[in-house]
Structure formats: C-alpha cells, structure tokens
Image 1 (cartoon, rainbow over the protein chains, first blue to last red):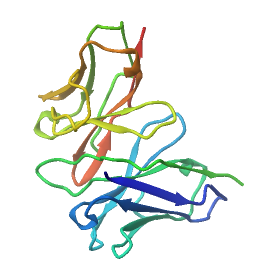
Image 2: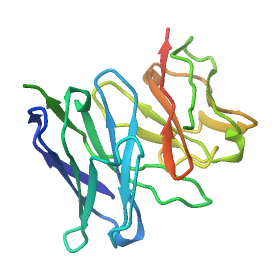
Image 3: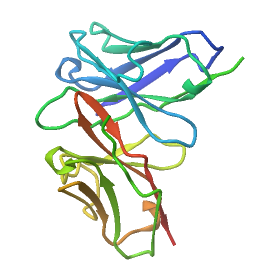
Length: 121
Length: 106
C-alpha cells in the first residue's frame, strides 16, 4: 500500500522560505514522478511542480521563479522549497504520486495528509 | 494559459443522478481526471484517463470526455457523496485543475 507522509514548518513570516519534505512508502520510488500541490483555505487546487528519482523537474510557470523541488532517492523522499513567501502563499500543501508528461495523461494518487502553512507577521 | 471551468455548485436528491461538467478548449483531445475531496481530507482520485476508476472506487462513479467538456456522473447518488469535486488535465507541460464543484445531496 502506497503511503506518503509529509512534514515541515507550519508558520512562517513574510520573506522566509517554506520547506516541506515527503517520504514515500510501499512503492518503487524510481518508477514514478512525484508532485507538490497546494490549496489556499476555502479555495481550489494549484499544481506547484514535479520531480522524478533522477532529479528531473517541471514547475508551474506562475511559481517557477521561487520554487525548488529536490529528491533524495536513497531515502525515498522529495522536498519542496518556496522562497520569499507572502500571505498569498498560505495554503495546505500536499505531496502526491504522479506527474511526468506522457500520452497517457497525468493523475495524482495517492496524496499525502497535507500540511497547513500559514504566512503571517 | 489553459483553463478548466466547473460550475461552483450542483445539487441532487438521494438516489438520483448527478452530473458535474468541466469545460476547456479541446479538452476532449486531452485526458481528464476527477478528484473527490471531503472537508478536512486530502483529495482522492476517482476517475483517470477520462473514464477509468481506480481500485476501490464505486461503480456509480463514471466519466466521459468529448469535444470541450468532460463530465463526471454519479449514479444513485448517496449522502456520502456530498463533497467537492475537481477535474484536472494538463496542457503545455503544466497541470491544470478546475475550480471545483460543491455537490450537495439533499
């Protein structure tokens, strides 16, 4: 059974860097792409970006200048860093299995438990 | 940038059929998928590749995609199906989500 467990700081001040990590259990890490998705309170979902086991990344153009997704394949973990955060970055952040542009389409399954990150001075 | 449009809300009576639409330019030429999200929970994939159901998803959930519209259909809607539903596709190497539809079962 695939499980994703995520953690990271939940309260940040403006201009700080958001940092989250997601650990993957129960599946071959190298067989998939892994993504980060966020959801502001009461709003919809926004894809942040993706990475594979070898470190190949793809980012949402709207966030690309501030986002870094990295991988530690030896630990079956991948991480998100979002720099220069503002109140607009307040959201629940999810990690998920899925990504990689293919003719078969993209879907995300399963998702991590989510981490609420609040940006406030 | 590519956009997917969903109705903000849909209401259905228990036992009836609910249909939730997702519109985007030439969406039928892409693969669409659907997620269910209940309050305080992570989204759950319920349809992928337009009409495939992951293991464990009830048969009452079905999907279609043609032209500019993908549709999620819930047959014999149950009270437990009350949730937010999101469609998703990708375009130009970017993943796009619809704005979400709140399904009310009353």
